[in-house]
Length: 316
Image (cartoon, rainbow, N blue to C red):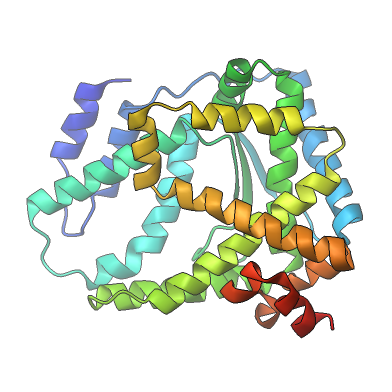
């Protein structure tokens, strides 16, 4: 890990686009300790068992028909950076294709900002279900960032195997959503492309962005519902300790999280969870799963605030 080399990579950003992705990757990695990936055979079996058990429990509780991603990886932080640079590069490609002349200083700033964001996230992400939006084909993947899982389990003073299992259950719930709703990736891609096209023209498409935010609120909230109903062990202590750790962050870390929109993600969890808990309590978990029938059965923003509106519309 070398801050000097990271700065050099950013300063040397080149090309014609808004960012130099090679420099982003180099700078992010130079600023990030990859962490240990010395996985024993027993630990590898533990990951596999957690994912398999999570799949079976989520299928049973949610009544969802889905398969796990073919790609399930135990990663260190540099692997995670590589995977997410590829995702960001795909998402931003339409903007880069339409971008006119980009001054060198702007490219350096953009490159540095993206490298900083990826480095911060690489040190904090525990697990990730990646639907590989805007990729060719219908692939998806599941990642576990082992150094972060072990670090946070130690910080929280909780059993590492139990904490790892909790992360596995959470990420598999996301795989369940996208697996049960084959249209979901395409729906999100469509909203992203609409917003990106408008942004390329110098406009902000608040409608598409709002619909995308509402969809993500449903995605995060339903995952929380399944987590509560499917996990095979009481985990209030885990959630409490994670929340306490979040509240105890220093001012700089909290500022960075706000800049990266991570506070919004937490709000999505909370709003979505409240919506689905109300629906499940009124009509059952299976009824809550009807959100994945089609794009038309997704809740609107108003319905998330008032679940009875959605219930009357979908399951009168």
